[in-house]
Length: 224
Image (tube, rainbow, N blue to C red; front, side):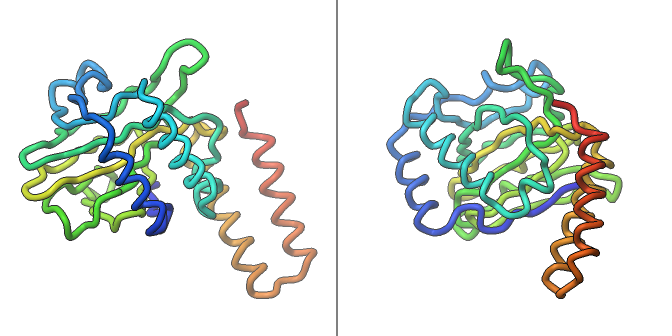
């Protein structure tokens, strides 16, 4: 299940991120790709060992964690390091699937979900759509700056060539406490239904019954 998360970053936060990225050097992004994806990856990324990059990673991750849909959609257990990517005209990332396991030692995680947070105004560049394959075919996504898409990391996806301007984005991966995508989707639907019933003025007993169901399913399925 793919999901759009609107307004993860507001205008002031976007301006801060873009300004700070403007002060950081960029390097070829191939070194952070797996062996298969490396051959089709052509973009730039900020160095992960730069303290300014690490501060931006924390800033963006905290914004994601505050988003009202992110927690119930992802049920996050662990985050990867975030990558800030830059695509200039002619740059692209061909069709690939993400490695199932990334990192090493205590930082090793299973990539259940991936996310892309768009940082450039959509009118400032052309091309650069994120295309994600699903059972319904390929879905192309170009979001407004500050919006993000959350999608299965095991899907085949690509970034179309940028033909004008510069495409900036933050990307990362999440290991969920719920490994099974179908179980995650069911819990999400129940949580959304609970919110809508509460907004409609449902009785406390009905809401409590849903809370009990969600909690017991989490106990049954969670992997900690």
